[in-house]
Image (tube, rainbow, N blue to C red):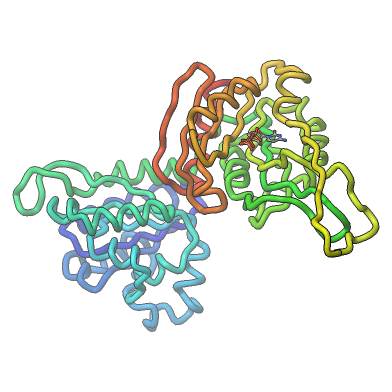
Length: 396
Ligand code: CTP
């Protein structure tokens, strides 16, 4: 099942370190290439030789050891080929170091140097887990995209029954599998996603636009793709790299985006409009000559742009398609989003305030056509994208 996947397992100092042996063993049985990195203290609890034998790879305790001399810059080359990195058990000290950006040993250096999916399975005394500083570190790491498995309630090393036990190896492995092999529930579906901003030319060198980064739309396209959908990504200008296996249909203006959406709409099962489309466009565009300045005030006349969602939902007809919009608001978030949901005849609308407009994370609510409102805490846009795709998928 995990053949061809590389997983790096970090082991930190906790009595639960012995359970990490079972995690390695199960991952190996599933065909993964597993590398273990240990903190110095954890090697007092379980011998590196055990992990070496179970994983079949050298155990990384020191990035400059002789054993790794044939791997150039191991914290970069190894972590670059990792599909997933997990720390199990992860103690409070490691949580604090990762949250603070401290890389003072092999394990923390490898985790901070990697862009792979990262999972933490905490294990510590309940008093430490409930410490507000640890709590803040956990929140910080969640916002940065780290995923947490556990901790669970149960008998702790001190004899107390409370929260702090590392999750069972089987649960950790189950979560790793679902992260590496996402559900293919959208296979056979075609999802049309718009992303980025639009730019409305004033003259050959100037335009009107907004601050949208395209991150949310690109994350949605990636999430739909990961779940087996064929995806058309219509993108206005954006500062974000498109998912590797999706070639965006590039547009510039609201008019260009409308045309592209109409082109692909007929074959789509769902349209997700994450793009920040201009509401107004200049009535006159000086296509050839730059506007010259003079001492007078300049008045630009703007006319309304076509509302793409309205155009497709009301004039072109739904024909069974799912329509998802976004509502970016500075005030009365839910009320305004509800109005847009109705006016544009949508199935779902994702409401977010402008504080997370061009950020990596988003605090948002999903409003359903039937009136249900789901509120979500600040979370990475990739995580939010999967939730939005989940809700869309349930409507097919
Ligand atoms: N949208 C669209 N065509 C436009 C403007 C917006 O399809 N010309 C879509 C956006 O992609 C988004 C939804 O409509 O999914 C709501 O966009 P938003 O900018 O929040 O609201 P507007 O309808 O433009 O209203 P306002 O700017 O007054 O809040």
